[in-house]
Image (cartoon, rainbow, N blue to C red; front, side, top):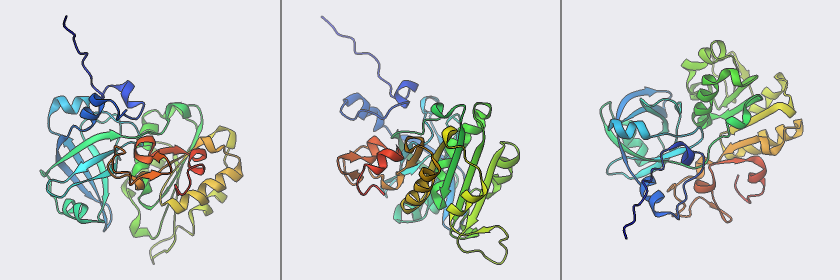
Length: 302
């Protein structure tokens, strides 16, 4: 008697709606697959951050690679290891993958020296995602601090591509100073074309800054929030989560309608190194996206 093993491919959409099951050998093998990529564009955003556009070289592999807003991948710099990076492009864009990378270590420093045509590898995607379908028909409040705008760019693209399915969309963005602001070239498009209410604020203004000054929570004084019809997505430094989410809770937004990304805790992406572990939870397997109620029940998660 012969047995025919069914073809397995974790890149089809039902798989993308859940984290991979690392207990299943075929899913580990597929998730451990390295897609060879070419750097096709580099945009210098600030003195410390660059946006890299990566194109999967093999057309067949490019066609099957899919991700959802909020997921991340492992970026391999040949000879210098790999590190986790949130995806900052549209999940419908199969031409390239955008990664916003801050220069913080040896691997990222080498990558910042790369030029167009350089080759790197990616694995993934990994982790949970923002429940964009669940938010249909509601207001969406996006709150980002500093580099936190990078992982929010994917849900922003999703909203823009399905704009008629959502009601009011607001983006509140705060940084330390004006020079730290990311994606400034897209602000006008978000406001006028995509009908997104964008508000920015800085901690330390320079001589040319004419906008708002203070903590990001100051922006809540200028907007009206319908707590029963609003979903919130918050990304940024962990210390920001408590102030922002506790304020949203005081306004009446349920904690299970607030979503945060603990992507700063990511390491191996597969729950093997245990460096992302909080209690008995692996944030790289069970996350990085959690609702705030779950985060509040994870001791020392933020």
